[in-house]
Length: 376
Image (cartoon, rainbow, N blue to C red; front, side, top):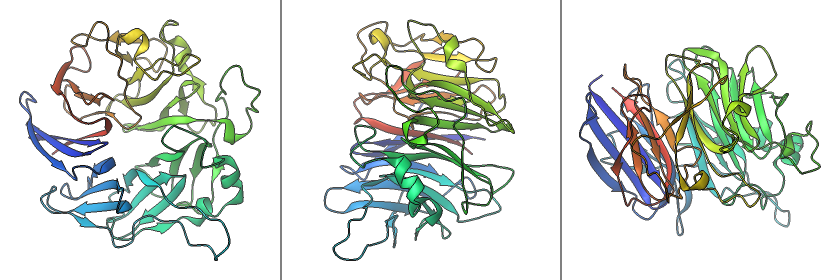
């Protein structure tokens, strides 16, 4: 593994950062798609050259771009994710933007999944050139009930996100909806079951905890070395589930009370299922979505959520009011795991020692929506 690449998606384009194995100096490639909203850019790990980028522009609308040469050339999808047209006079849904991209396993070359806003699930079998709906989700009246109104949800629209393919079994899928809960399929998306036991609802509201519509998962992460363990960052805390149990445990209650366990993003260690990192934000009653008290920090657990430690060496000590969105934190697979996150103020931060020390490797980018790391 000689090259580390960071795929940085922003409100006004995308950038690729590259470094050698030492991760000392970073070369910048970009912008790509300057002026486009890029929600997610992902490298296909099966060939390590194909990139997909979920894009939206005012005049082109939502689409997906594909490159087979690391971004030197891009081609737009022939058939991007889109809901089926309805008969004239009837009301239907339209994709505002593709939000999340996930490649399938190595035994399914060319297969990708995409989640959209408003909530929809799509699949491609030809490397992102054409996309088709999964009717078990998109056409389901029950799912539509859980999704709520397209005017509900996060400030930039409700989303289907965190699409996970079990690395041991391509038939085993998970995803989260904001809002609408967590869902699991054992038959490659033909049928689904709700997975919300143990998840709580926001305090102070008369919400039915058994109704998926009232659950707002922000990010799901499966542990690469133990796919039976999944961590979750939620509107109502940080959770862990160990399959085959169907009960989520709220491990965020062990976070410092002054910080709380509300945030959008998290990442997990590639080889240690007991280790995970979160970036908490101010979740007070008016939801300012900033670093708590203007003092940003990553928190790490190395015992499956029993305890958490603050990691802020190198970060601003005060008056830093940015936060990190749900796709904008990740890690690499080096022996000393590198951690990365991008901020709402356009800064890209990096730690080469699993969070002990941090440094900013880019400033003045547009608002960062997603960061993905690849080592090859």
